[in-house]
Picture 1 (tube, rainbow, N blue to C red):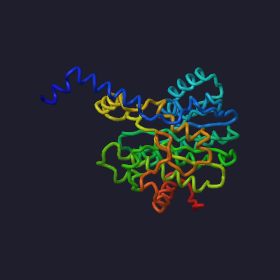
Picture 2: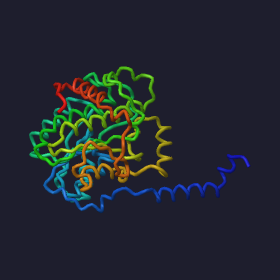
Picture 3: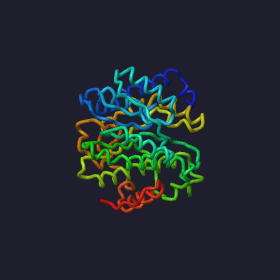
Picture 4: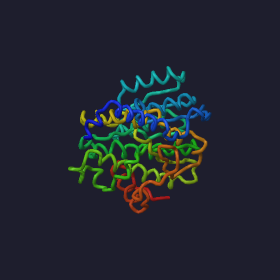
Length: 327
């Protein structure tokens, strides 16, 4: 029998769909946020990119735990909708909206200034905002857009807020990375848009996610003994708007396959919530957590201290921070 008629046969199609559903239902369940009773009353958290997808689900969980939650969003309109939804569903009136565009270092600095002026403490910082498939372009500050959005903005923000987090210790910093970091490389010139033309659209994203892990580990080393822990994680393949910059054909394939195989935003948020609030992650630092909330080894490239040191220095220069010796 030819393959195409076989695949088109209704019985065969139903069997395939049934098998897919069974495999999805039997997929290993990670740590369950609903079974974690940790309260965040009296604590303050920032979630970047909190107006949609994983970020909104994380913010919703933190709000249910009675945290003061600051939604750091680029779009005021979408951020306001998320704010109203989270307040309505959780009954938490201490959910606030602040404007933040991580692709703009000026926006990051302005946001950090407002936080330092308004907030007495910061217990949780979740660097979630990011995008894949952005067209190659340069920001007004001379930085490549994807690297600025996904890495340099979060890098600068974390540096600017570390002092407040030290005062609030024990506190936690979380970087949302990706398993795609394994396909990334470190070319420092890419931060300023050099040597990336001609690569496939996901190449800058993969590289930026590798940089997230490397700098998260360096933050952890520099903050060792202060009570501030730093972890990075993989949320899994999640049905979010992260691919909105790809062609409609790619988005259609992503959604079609994702309906059966990918995680929902609620499922994708689990590893982030685990790192941010769980008792199991208390004191956990300089670690990488997989999408099932298990300790995992990132790629060998992410565990290269000499290259990490060079990356850190290049990032400081790119965002305009003074050089700081490793501690």
